[in-house]
Image 1 (tube, rainbow, N blue to C red):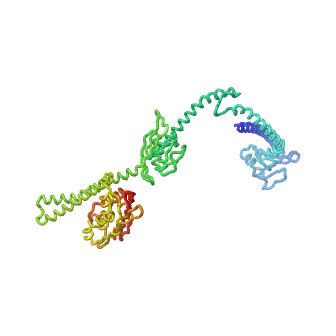
Image 2 (cartoon, helix red, strand yellow):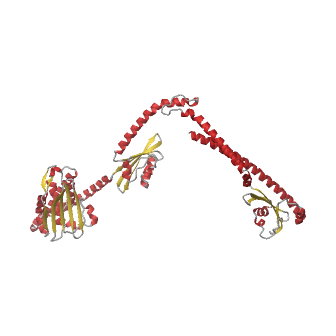
Length: 556
């Protein structure tokens, strides 16, 4: 503050001095120029009367006192020039004042700087015969006049500056000495300025309240930050100008942007048209809601205005991750549609055959064949329902926890034995390699995982193909590998084969018995045991499924 007062005093003194000197010089220069201009105009008019009376002979007996006089005819020819220049290139012919006098019929002035120390004042008037009389006179310029006073002015400004610095130092210290003596941490009366005594007393009284309030605010802020940072949902609070007041890290994470700081515009976190409309509706006093699709998934934006009476004091924005919700809803619709289709097909067949049997339009020799069709479709329905029930239990984690030590190699052998007839029908050879590995888990679920993988390997194999099942282990892991020499899976479908009812080739899959839920059961069964399953395939050459199960301490 001392430096500021000192600089202010010096600056005011210098500015005042400079302005006074500048205004004085400007007024003097203006007055001097006006006087010169008036005198030159009068002299031009006198010379003009003489020329109109006596012609160019007037110049022979007239003293021009250093004036440059030029007489120009109506057709632009120089009739007389006091400096003897009557050539067509005389600069007076193209001067502004000559042009103005010929155009307006009246004299005009122009000021031209001829050098840093000289200026020329020119006047031109139009005579009665149409000729133009131009006079000009050279005088010292304003800069030249100032230059003559440069040394005295410089000394003057140096003196003023020194006096200003000394006065400023003395006055600033004297003014601020009592104020600097005040202890900001304990403002008590004692200043020599009566004007600030009420302020000091008030500060002293408010210090305690401010300290308590600051402590409460800090605690509230810390609690608010702790609560909002623990939220999975994004929360943004902005003022009426849409500048951020508070923003948790979940907001930036959900919208895929950097965490903004307080005071920045809310559009820093997302600047899409949909987001802007939602925020602007809230700022206008309406509740707004929209869904943004980002690179990380779907985000629901809920923006509400914070209003008091009719004014909007700010907005509150919630950001919710609805990716999984939308995905589950899509899966639910697809599952319902697929289940309806899968149930309808066999039921239609059963109903049609039963209707024919009930109406007696089936020959006795065909009854057995129709009965086998009914049984086959009924078996398909039962298998489908069992698979749906198994998936539901795995989804809801309601499968009974009857874990036990299971020999994975033995379980694989049992699965291949159950599929021996299916493999024989397609001339597919099966091989089991590896070693006996004990795993603590649900025998039924593990059996379904291996069975479904082997069943698919046989069904989607080529005639005369091969299926190899290998059981192995590494430290703390069990590996089950099922490979075939079948038709393979196109690369673009690999990421979706574990979805329910998803079929790579629907026309081919309809000809092969199955519910379309086998690989979904595999995925859920492996997840039930905290494992992973992956598929690698080359179209036309075969597919390899690898199940990896973690061995926990009690498995050993």
